[in-house]
Image (tube, rainbow, N blue to C red; front, side, top):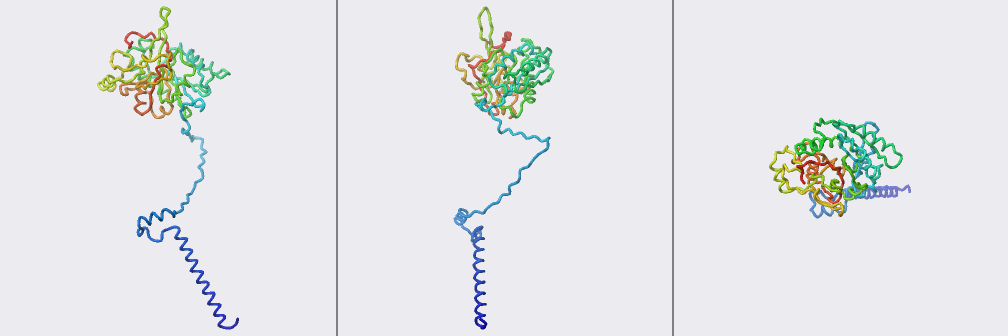
Amino acid sequence: MTRTRIVLFVVAAVILFVVFDGINGAKGGVERFYCYGPSKAPMQMTPNEQAEWAGHLQTPVLFNHHAPIEVNSSTIQHIDLNPIVSTPKALSNEERVLILTPLRNAAPYIEQHFDLLSQLTYPHELIDLAFLVGDCTDETLAVLAQELERIQSRTDKIPFRSATIIEKDFGATLGMDVEDRHGFKAQGPRRKLMGKARNYLLSAALKPEHAWVYWRDIDIKDSPSDIIQDFVAHDRDVLVPNIWFHRYEDGRDIEGRFDYNSWQESDTGRKLSASLDRDIVLAEGYKEYKTDRTYMARMGDWRDNKDVEIPLDGIGGVNILVKADVHRSGINFPCYAFENQAETEGFAKMARRAGYGVYGLPNYVVWHIDTEEKPGNAD
């Protein structure tokens, strides 16, 4: 082992081993690098070579996932409207309903109103009530407060989830007798004022959890107790019933047609609107303007299939069921002339313009009080 040639042989073997291992290591490094890129520059590759390369070798991407952000400030509120939907199965999904009623000098009708509300079969724990009291000269506010206290103090299933009273005067000067309220000259100013009142009530009462908005006038005489379920089953954006009234003369029950604000547009009506100043508000059911519109009040029969639907261009405000998202999208009750209509008829025009469906049920009748309207309205 001490001979010079043996020592030289060992040294040469070690050198050869180191060199050979280095070559293999470099080759492995090249192979590892090759996994992340092609063997030639991309500009030198043909389209087929690029497609072949991209088809079996992908560059790994690492994402930096952030930790959740925690917000503890009591002044910041988060509202998620995505789960709030309006479906035909509102009852099983426990969807919240908001019932809205504007009031002015309505004291004589409040007790009957609550009698009918108490009979609603939709779960009362899913119903919120809201009232707007404005420009009253009678005991509307006091009677309303007493009735709400009576209902909400009960220990059965009659009390509603909540009730809100909103006061707002608009400076109304129109009288409340039949001639003042339903005469032709009063319709433009009255409808604009009612539109404003409805918008104030809506903006103050609508909450994120509401899926449906049910507009219900105070002077309804009778209506089905399951009207909410009947209406939501149609799954329409906006839906109204037919509005009639009972009148008893000489022992006979006369079924009168009440609401001429629910109608289908006509060519005559379109031409008339095109010829009018844009600030003029048309009022239906009056002979001053000839529209030849088709009135739902003159259609239907409560003895026939109650689920028959017809599309409408204008609607009345006695009883309206609206998907809450329609209102959230900005469809409200114009307190100005919108396409020569205001309030509920303007609301229908606006909803249709925005792409929402507006429908009526000619055979589904809600009974209004008999206002004994004066001659001049459409017969």
